[in-house]
Image (cartoon, rainbow, N blue to C red; front, side, top):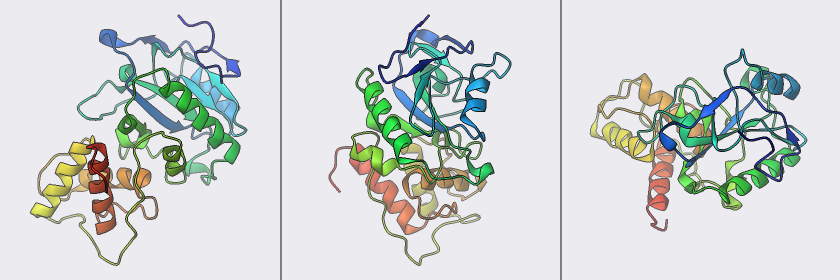
Length: 254
């Protein structure tokens, strides 16, 4: 059991009782970023260390950039919940979770302050320096739980992290006037979109029909990678941005 922070950047060690061993000897190969979704950071911290909450995270970053560690990185924190990515359903065993204090969509969803983003960037680099986490497995909570979760949301600056070498990113293809694919559409173009989303890691069925499940996954993709418009419609901008990311992941220049 960890009795002191793993990261030298953690100013505070406030242990949570909500953890257990990682299953099957897993080591973390995924980094998941969340927002707290609570009005105060103090309330979020108290909840994450409350035995009755049944939730926790490895780290918490407050608005001023102070970092608190609550669960050791070798342990399985309870932050991902019901989730899926690239065939993995036990994301808690596979990941390290960072909670970033922000009240979230239910409380006016303010911007993430610069000092907080600097701390998140430094903490991510620190974690990535100690664990073999591929850039494509630095994910949003909304990526692994589309529809159920929206955090850290479309105001989170993923491009900034990418400039520091954190996560997979490409400049989104500009918005156009095309209506794109949407609910009720049935075509090979829909199937191609679903195959691309599935290949990228999202939990989506390839059915050739644009149903609510596909719309929800497209919303999650847009919230992370094409933040200018979050509407669940797969316009050219969304589809081509996804194609670019798949190419970059494969080592192809775009």
